[in-house]
Image (cartoon, rainbow, N blue to C red; front, side):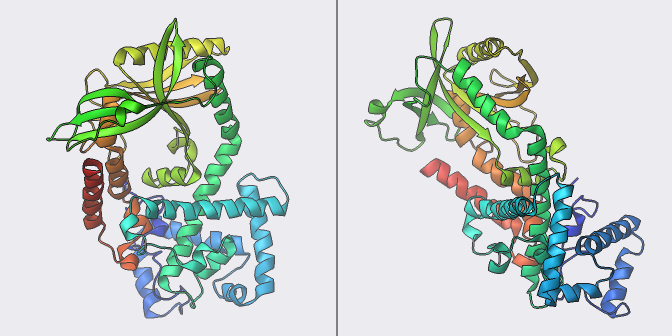
Length: 436
């Protein structure tokens, strides 16, 4: 289901529905023309009427009021608003399972607001970088961290439509950030991440090397004119790479490699380990039209590895399972997808390419479930550079094709044509990949 459909789990955010943020706050006379038009719009939609009642009751319960008229008192009475905020923060703390003093609850809420801002700023920094000034958050909204203040802005006629929409958007993103934080505390993800790194350093990587000792190498590659896929690649030492200036259709890619020792074989491996930041998890929830991180975010811990050949990949897998046994844990490989030696990758994520070769699986060990993505040098270069496969292009497609771009930056407020921007950004990233 698209996030932009009226049946979306986030339908209260849509600007083409009954919950749209208009030019003026929703403080109109019940018998006014606009009120009658709004009632007619949802008269036959029982689901929308149920959602309206749920949202209205949530607002009243959160603010401790019995009608919309009482909200005006909170807007203009600072002392009353402070009392309301203290009560509301306690309610949120209990909802998100934060058993702590008010000061710690406030700190968590501040972190949720910062995550909400990071979601927008991460898109401004890369996928929508040329349009950064168009989608910049209003100063007053970015510097507001209290959910009560943000909610009251929705009903404050002093604020422009764009600012009120951004306050509403920030509240929604903060709610997702809170769910993610609760999930991380329940699953102990921070400790598991530390345990995973310890497992790799103690049992997987070569004991003859110091932790963090990386060998600088370069992948010197040639690429097809047809789709810029890798046709030839060789590994160069740092001093060898200095002597070569890549020409058109060639790339020089830096990789910093560790080593593992398997039955006397010393094998180089480039590894990047990731723990998704909260802002990336929020975006994933939006893309999947989900509010529950337990069902939508299954790759909190991940490792991507690049080896010289398929035989080295097989050697690494065997070494990995043996290392787990040495660490006193059995390891099982789940949801295996292998297209390194042929076949097509049938990705389920919107924007993903069926031409992406990789070995992908989840490893369960030591109470953790870790996503592994394994490449050879050639498939890794395709993952970076090949047309319709490159990860930079995939990032653009999944933000636009899932409807998240329009959802966060609706055209009636930001006046942007997302279809044209999608095409322009794909062309921009393709030019960066092939010409620089």
